[in-house]
Structure formats: structure tokens, C-alpha cells
Image (cartoon, rainbow, N blue to C red; front, side):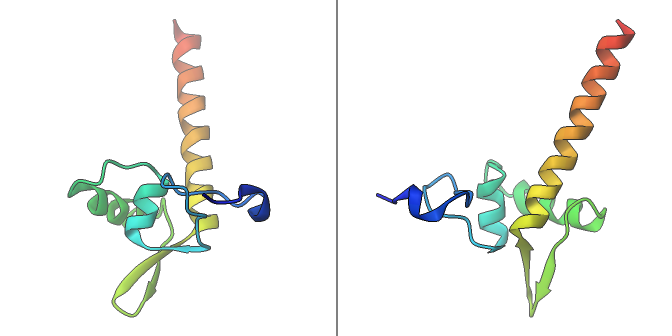
Length: 91
């Protein structure tokens, strides 16, 4: 069992491991709680290609900085909140 107190405010992956500062595509999918099917990596690539999620190419692999993934979530949350607010105002 992890001692969460020793990690301070470091976010954790669903399996209880502390999230590293640089995530693999699989760790990013876990962090975002994507379902893990074949569409997961395509979704990450789509978000990269459209500039929504920053990825860093290291050799042949793409890695995601945790701060970029968190910023992506913040933007998605804000966009979702504003679209819900607009929908409820129209009603």
C-alpha cells in the first residue's frame, strides 16, 4: 500500500501508483480513464494532431507531460461547463 502522505499533492493513476511527470500513451490513457480499446491511442493522436493535447516525441515514442494532460483536462472541463451553461440559458 502506498503512503499517500509522502507524495503530497502528486496525482495518482487509477491503480494507485503516483503519476510520473512524463507519461507514456498507456499511462495517459489510464490517467484520463479512457477505456483502453484500440480507439484510445487514436484519440490521443487526434487530440495531438488538432493541438488540443501536447505530446513530446522522444525517439520513436510520444510522451505526455503530466502538466500538459492536466491543462488539457482543465480546458475540456471549462469548455464543457460553458456549453452546458449556454444550453441551459436557451431553455
